[in-house]
Length: 634
Image (cartoon, rainbow, N blue to C red; front, side, top):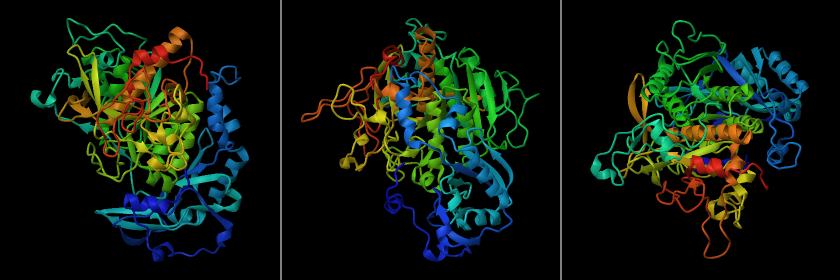
């Protein structure tokens, strides 16, 4: 993660810094030199009215992130895992192995627990990977423990809490505590599901205006995983070109109330982290689980078993149900079937609660990929410390052979500071987090056009496909691959002042799939929501489609080549080439992804090869699976 100036970034995103008088409302008895700031910084607010201090008796739930050891060795270790002849080649870490090499020591964890206990924190819980310690305390105790100040603000009719001073720890914990989450409720991540309306035949254009809404079987045809049925384009049970995902477990980071697998026996109980519940979706299921059952029944798909894992207190919130419907149905649909679908459910979409759900998916270590169809302008998790905490969890996932997927957002080359899905440039120019994490596969969006039998014709870039160079995250080594070219596949992966990356920036997205609608075509999924069908698109569709595509590739490699594929990042970039140096440049290309070369997202255009709108392109599942090498020269 970069440590460049924050102030210039804040000005560009429209955030304003609190006045010095507010920042200095409290004085502390301890000398400043005895305290060290964590990655959790004072939060600047815009158009907020200060109401006063947070009452000292206010209950708070705090998540303390701990620093890893040997952080500089994470990417070299990933490189060793794909280097033939290395002892780590083809190996993955267990959680305990990760802790042994990278996790904080037992003594460091105990020191944090003792420190929190000394300030009256209760219900302390250390996560399995020792990266998070959570606990409950009053606002007064939180302020004292982290040498900070908590204030209340009014903004747009809401009462907000934020820390007006950096969260700090004593010098003795400076090398142990990385961030303190839960000090604010200013912002929640935005889900990106976009409701669409089918266009009329006139504006839809060619080749076939009817092919604007796709079933799971038709996505399989379009992205080259199944053979079309020439006599019945809408047929189910198609002949497949490669293995289904039936041996691959996948996950979804979700929030709120997803319903019950069986309303008569296993609905959630309102206690902290109730035990997981498992079973097959059925007629007695409710909510999102029942919608998945209806989807599987209607499209004659084999049932995918479901497990619901709670990362906190179950919430009654059902506002995101359409999002979790889209994620579950599109990912398992293009996969035909998954071995198991795990929902890792957060209490809310705040950074602190989502961090717990992400960490739970990683420490559970039961899936080969998990999806996150939500995001926020990356300035915010940079400031509140969530980027520091989550990046390490994603890195652990990669070392364990897990691939996190995330939607790149639906504001084009802007980031989702407001919920204006599908409106390019409706926010500040930036990328969305967690898509911008180096250890996440970010999925952008396309408009998909097919032939009458649903075989692939062409894709154009969706104008709201999120993308661009990140200004906070550094590029992973695989984005600097050159292949047979002479420059990096991703331009910002090298020192490149022309795109605002004098020290290198992580490029977003990595791949793209069907997402959005324009006057040319509508690209959406017929999704069951609350028992009825709706047309939903956005990168919230493209990301789970990408995860489902990867699930099939993992399954096929395991079945036929006896190769257990790991983290997808360096593997898929092996299939691409950088451009040749010198004018005129030879376009970079990948023969195995569908290269999207037309359209733009505001600041960036789809071009031959990698671009900041559609990444490497969309998955040609058969070709990627066939040509993904089992040994890697890098």
